[in-house]
Amino acid sequence: MDLAQHVKSSRKRQRGSSRQPQSAADVESSGCSGSRPRIGNPNGTSVSSRGSNPKANTACETCRLKKVKCNEGQPICNYCNTHGFRCDYRQRQISRHEQLISELPRRLACGEEKLENVLVLGQRQELRQAHIASDVPVSDSAITTPSSLETIALLRFNILAESSVIIDRAENGYQTHDLFSDEAAVKSRYLETSPFTCEEDRPPLPDFISQTEPTKPTDIMPWLEYYLEHTFPMYPVMCDPSAHKVSGSVAAQGFGNNIESCFTLLIVALSKAHRNENCLDSGVSDFQRAADILGRVSTQFRMQHVQAHVLSALFLLKKGRLLDFWSSLHMGCTMLYTMLKRDQASSTERSMSERMNLRRIYWICYNLERDVKNEIEIDETLPRSSLHELEDTLPLPLGCDELDLSHLPLRLRAMLTYFLAEMSLKAIAEGIFTTPDQEFYVQDPRAGSVDVSPLFQELRRQLDVWVSSVPSFLGWSPEALKGLSSPLGIRVKLMYWFVRFSIFKPLIQRIIHDPNSLFPIHGWTLFREGLHAGLNLINVSILEQSDVDVFMGNRILSTICLIRDTIDKGYFPAERDQNVSAILGAGIDVLWSQLAGKSEWIKCRLYGL
Image 1 (cartoon, rainbow, N blue to C red):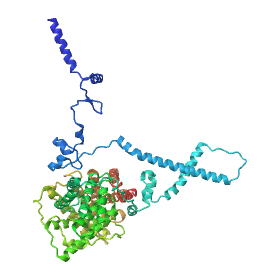
Image 2: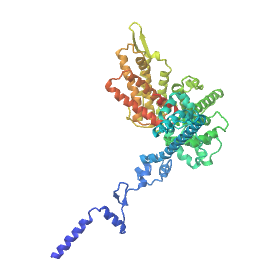
Image 3: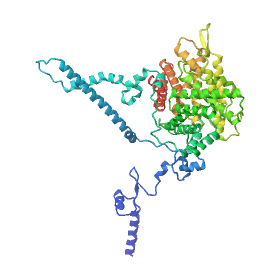
Image 4: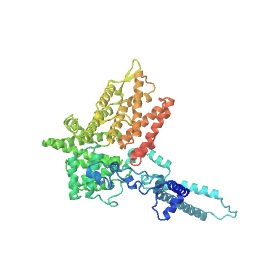
């Protein structure tokens, strides 16, 4: 009996010890003894070999949610392509260690170049001293050897003395990378020039045609689907069926020297540029191939030729090349005007879908020309097309002839509604920009006071009506981080706050530049309302983190400059100065991170702050 109890207690102890966790030594010994090992993760803890599959971390979001195998196809995987789902991938976070490794070759090249400059300067100094020594007679006095500190000081003096000669011999200062020169020298270089000159002196785009593998015809349709999903809603210059028809024929027959291939390559280039916004080279090779074809085909005043020039302009705008964008846009606007005038002269009747496309592309081109005039044209020397003559022949609403869009699919309905809303908002903005500043307020000479004009009140009323008329099914809100978030909705939100700020801008400028003017209490209330609209514009750009183009970046920057002037003039309470300054600083950081790397116009203005 005692023996049986002893055996039972021994078995219990063995079972208890088997349930205890293994130590690191036990794991190593078990791995060496041939038993099934455990897989260690990077944190040092042991995980069962049946743990999570690391491939799941690189699968697209749709396959992750539906728990299906993803082949990680680019730009769209097989599962999403088969079922028509949206295919998005998580952006891999680059660690600090990887960033340092990627920057190592550049830093080494920078160090080697600086070392070569020092060696060359040293050789010049030795030759100069030898030449001087040969001309000076030998003295009988004792020769004093300079100390090491004197030698270092002399070398530093010579480097500073010769540096201006090296900079003057450079063919183009803008071709020298900023990291190879001192930050103060870079800033002074930008301060000495205007944003327009900085854009003119940009180096040409590198030749990527010979350096990259061309896009295959089999890759066209996935990129087309990405374009229609992400890029097309921002600028609907065509309809889905026509894009599918043209790109489908090129995918079936292959690329050639025709306008259809040019059109398709531009769609692929824009898709790649929007897919990888942080890479300045994305889509450039396809764009250059399209530009080569566009330069060789004969000019025809037809829709596809107009669309090709407009798509080229949109790609250059995405890359921040402002003057190149204007050149392509001007060509597209001129061709569009000629085509519309030829239709009028020949009484050409177009189908409903063609008329819809013509209206959309007309208002896109017309408003982009207005953006050039209002944002970058300083001396009014850039020529404009004659599209403004046809404004009354292509009235709003755009997209279709019916006010009710409820019969359309939800995606197309939302896109066209946003498009109508943005076009009407820009019409209000044009009324503000074309009105002289002095008409926004009236001055009473008897009372010596200044008040807002009826025109100001009418423009403000139009904007209030616009906000109240935005359809509720969009889920849009003008406030930051409220409502349904989409790139098009955020762009409309930014434009709304800029237009609202622009209504009050003449009043704000009058108050801060003419402190002797007497305004009633109502005027000071409007002054604070205008500053609040400007701060909301900056807040949306900070919190929404949406990619902005050069035009919106220039508007945000102008708003920051005017609000900074109000701070300098003491129109903010002391307790709010720090909060407002922090918002302005964060807005400047957003512009540095998004636009300074690709837009010389914005970079020059940022250095001027």
